[in-house]
Amino acid sequence: MRRGGNPEAGQSLSEPPAGRGWLSRTGPAGSVVVLTGDWIARDGAGAEYLAVARIVGAAHGPQISLDTSELGRWDTALLVFISALREAARQHGFIFDEAGLPAPARRLLALPASAAANPVPEPQRLSLVARVGRSVIAGATEALAVVTIVGETILRAGALPFGRVRMRGTDLLTCAYDAGIAALPVVTVINILVGCILAFVGAVQLRRYGGDIYVAALVGIAMIREMAALMTAIVMSGRTGGAYAAQIATMQGSEEIDALRVIGIPVNDYLILPRIIALTLMMPLLYLYGSALGIFGGFVVSIAMLNLSAVTFIQQTRDSIVLSQLLFGLTKSIAFGALIAITSCRTGLRAGRSAADVGHAATTAVVVSIVGVIALDAIFAVCANTLDF
Image (cartoon, rainbow, N blue to C red; front, side, top):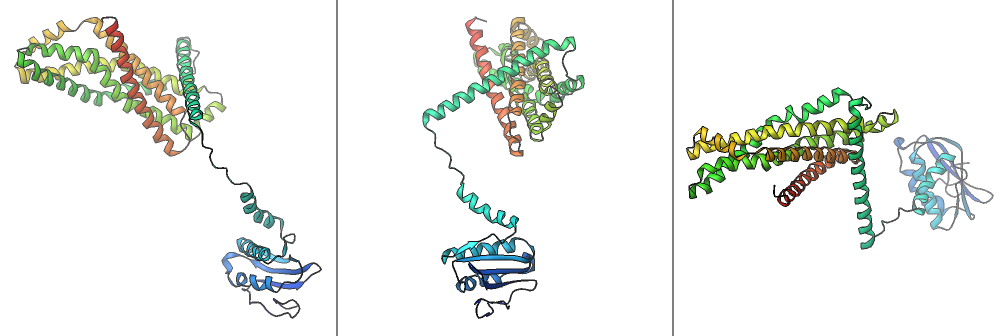
């Protein structure tokens, strides 16, 4: 039998590429297309696809079936040809029988039909009530997670002196160095500049009324009571808080946190507790350091602009600062440090697993920490005013 399009006349439909071919003959239920050789895409394609219409046009009977007994190797070249032949047979009203194909080829050809039969559902548009409800539930869930971290941290910190916490001392020292000594340069620059700005603004206004001497008191009270703690906390939110979130988010994406849970290492002891303790302990020290530098910045500006003597500035500063204000600033700095550490660690834990999620977690941690610090400072101010402090 020769290759042909008219199975009765045996006329050739086309010349197939070397290594592959087809035959068309009449079977019991209609036409049978016999596939021979290797159907590999890199070996060339095109001529056999042009013959699909002629094969279908020359078919007899209600059905077109396949015979692959002489088929060699195959890949997508065979699938494309069969798909085109099946579609042409459907358009001409023939029944296309794929039973003669290899089982893997039949499964691959069934994938597009399965995908079309089960399309991805469009996202459902939620009502306003549903969106508000989801937001409330998400907020409550997040609040519960934060409370859980706070509670676990308090309990584990209480057990730390008794040696019942699986926290490495080297991790605590590393976090303390990063949140303390490594942060001194930026804290130094910021607080000196803030002290200079306070002295400059105070000098411009107070010298109009002959109150130059009170610049020292203004700088001292402002730095001790508000600015040193607040500016240091904002700096640490961007520097250390963002780093905490990025580190934990990276570990989340690389599945290191999952590995810790699998081998039985408490994530809170290993990752969260050393960071919270380190930043909470370092913030009061940075606050005292920043307060001293801010007063020094005001001292420099006052001596340069107001012709105040160093003895007068120091005396006025010492008379204006009281111990209660210093304790008030220390309390705020401790609260700021705990807030930044808890917020950053929680943001890192809830991050996704992609590289973009790491950047998003760092940005979110910085923004939420700064807003939280300012809001907490406002709460402290209201409480101090209510208590006439």
